[in-house]
Image (cartoon, rainbow, N blue to C red; front, side, top):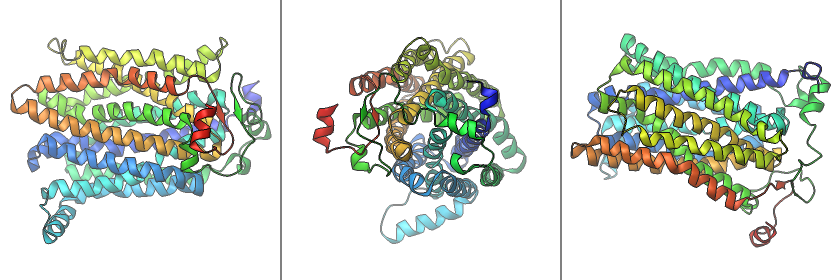
Amino acid sequence: MNQQAVGKYRWTVCAMLFFATTVNYLDRQVLSLLAPDLSKQFGWTNSDYANITAVFQFVYAITMLFAGRVVDKLGTKQAFILAITIWSIGAILHAFAIPMGSGMASLLGAVGIAAVPVSVAGFMIARTILAIGEAGNFPAAIKATAEYFPKRERSFATGIFNSGANIGAVLAPISVPWIAEQWGWQAAFMAIGAIGFLWMAMWQLLYEKPERQKRLGSAELAYINSDVVAAPAGSEQVGAHAAGTLSWFQLLAYRQTWAFAFGKFMTDGVWWFFLFWLPKYLSAQYGMEKTAITVPLAVLYSMTMVGSIGGGWLPTYFINRGASAYDGRMKAMLLIAVFPLAVLLAQPLGYISVWVPVVLIGIGCSAHQAWSCNLFTTVSDMFPKSSVASVVGIGGMAGGLGGVLVSKIGGWVFDYYGALGHIQTGYTVMFAGCAVAYLVAWCVMKALVPTHMEIVAPAPSFGVAAAAK
């Protein structure tokens, strides 16, 4: 089909999702970049910092479950506005963490609970609000992608908007340490947090559902809906199309839901581990401080853009050679899952130069982004648009809980080996777990869903659904 004749407004929507994800990761990463200085200023242990990051991940995980339902109920436009309002306020509130922490410490003391350090309590409160808002980004973005793109383009569109995470991760080390050095750490949180309100105005002006979008031509609308009626080759349909949103219990009756959730549980924590702990790793092992970490982190996260966009394209290679959408995606994900094994060499070869682990971890992070855009797309491939955000929310909760587990294990491992004077061993242990997580996830996902089956009707009872599949 002639793409020029079809129209291109759907790519404007993709661009808006890209910028939202960029802002999301900018706000998320400010703390990790300031963590080495804040740890010294407030006397945090690795476990203190792990507790702050774990609170974010735990609240993010729980909120993701409900965020998916909120997105499906409110609709993409209003849900995204609500999400970015909350997370921008949460980002700014980090600047007021100490007063908030004083109040929390007093409250805990009043009810007889041993209080955590005031600074830790304050940052926990701010991270909680940030997590509640940020949980809405990916369910809303995946739903918008399902609304505006036919299945053949969704993984590529997801790869593009998901690369906003990499841009955010690149821009953060360039901007945050400089702002903090010029005007203080509070200014860094406030300046970065305010960006979300600028995006909100653009979203309000430019986004509507395709059938109500005046900027969308009839040819492009028809192209977007071109695969709604006919199931993709090799798929098995279950029943007739249901107008309503599938309930949580109905969704949990499907192996497809569990496969997505397990994939998120095993691999989300890897990305968050590198996002939250890399600045501390460069500080602990290579003595790099403040703006010195800017270039290594910028290079590393620039590499991940290749993974995100390239990973989104990769299934198309297999699909164009006769594979079904699901088989093409799973072949791509198996190939992608091999690349994180490069992280196993980061510590053994790290003595050569700091750039060796930076590049090897960059390969692993690139693979994660390639994996992630394909993992997300399996949801819109197999579930009706009315339930996509709900499934993403369930998987997001699983991924967040995986992230909590990785953060808590990391804090304990680093404190333990740090006390022994062998912090390098701690990073070796954590890097090994991160390296093999994707292959484990792929094997379990493939066992749960060996072939594509598209869900287009409410699920039967769990026992019947399991037997049918």
